[in-house]
Image (cartoon, rainbow, N blue to C red; front, side, top):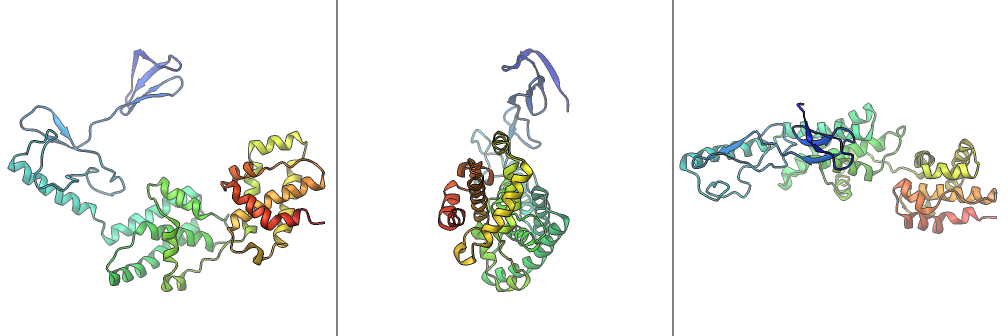
Length: 337
């Protein structure tokens, strides 16, 4: 990438030299992005009556494997106009009508292109979630199986199901099927899809589980709270705030970790499935870690290290959810004589 140094302009923060690249202006010393440069698109409309170029509006079609990357006549008007509102000549009208037809034809996904796009998306989301290779391959296998069933049912009902939602459902099924990997929440999968530019709701995935043909192929088993304990404790001890509290109280980190693990398992063993009552297992595990810390501080007659607010920030759970699970289900085990 070419860069040109300007001695006249200086950085407003550190008074360093600015570098102008093809896309932005950046300070060499502190790395501050002072401003951005909007580059000309690769395609432009040449005007006959005026010197210069009129540029097309950049669209959000970056996911296409082919195409111009812009939208031609997004308002679907009968006559094409330039940016000043003047009607183009008949020769230009015919030219842009042909371009619009070709552009729309490329924009429509066929079955092969749709499947290829979904499989590439599965690879991308698997990389963001750091999933092992066997889980990624299993999700791709499920997509090939399930997509055929859903396409067949959609033809009968005269509708088309989104392939991105099917891909998300297959990743969720592959993750829940393998008990050896660290359990991943549905919220985390949906966030990765949102980073990739797709807004999916949890209700969209639960709708796919109602297909009787899919239930024969995939049997999604719910995770237990015991599966999330190791993950929550590791992320809790990795927090700097928790490490500072442990150092102030002069507690060995390994001993504190082993104590949390053993007490959490005992608390959850004494909590039957009836008392859990269909609650979120991840939130129940977070509340169990909070209850274990309370129990350890009670035995050693020292102040608790974890608070509900601190644990809510670490585990990405609402503070009132931890409080509600602790008070209604787990508090009796902490203060039991």
